[in-house]
Amino acid sequence: MHDTVQALREDLAAAFRITAGFGWTESVGNHFSAAVSEDGMVFLMNPRWTHFGEIRASDLLLLDARDPEVMARPNAPDPSAWTVHGTIHRRVPAARVLLHAHTPYATALATLKDPRMLPLDNNTARFYGDLGIDTGFGGIADDAAEGARLADALGRNSCLLMGNHGITVSADTVAEAFEKLYFFERAAQTLMLAYASGQPLNVLSPEVAENTARGWDAYRGMAFEHFDYLKRQLDRSDSTWRA
Image (tube, rainbow, N blue to C red; front, side, top):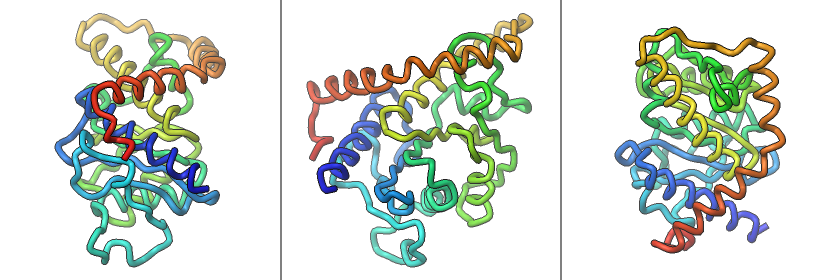
């Protein structure tokens, strides 16, 4: 169990460092979490106001989504992080890993009146039928009702576009969650550039979009190879993330 949790700590720490390397950080905000317990209630999450570029495996907080005293402790997490991640881990235990970020193109898409991820190519169609959209933005997510609404909006989807806010993705492993974050940003970039052209969009039919989305299932292994490559790059420059 110790080895499993340590491996999870290291993967999550790597995800923070890689995200920082891609320039997807928001000062010392945004949060990633990963469930440790089988029921999803006990999870790891980054400490309050620590930059992604400096996070180490040992820095991650071990929290219980059922613990009412979490926010009263000296090392309490960011209130919005606890509201969103604590609630989703409590209400959607299948969401083992949650990565929330304000990546540039995903956030731009989230500000549109119609923030749907239209299927235009392989990457945009990847999320067809697997993207919840929340349009109830009411400011910084720091109250219980906000967390519950976001958990409901995620539902059985693995990704949630938070209107006027950003993107949250979920998966069974950190590698797979990071791959979704990576491809969602690539897809959002394609869609926003297509919108910027001012030309009519050649949107795929529902049948082709569905077929394309399902076609990605055979490429699940890409996530692990990609993530392992990125971790090797981290080790070449600074391996302190493993500490």
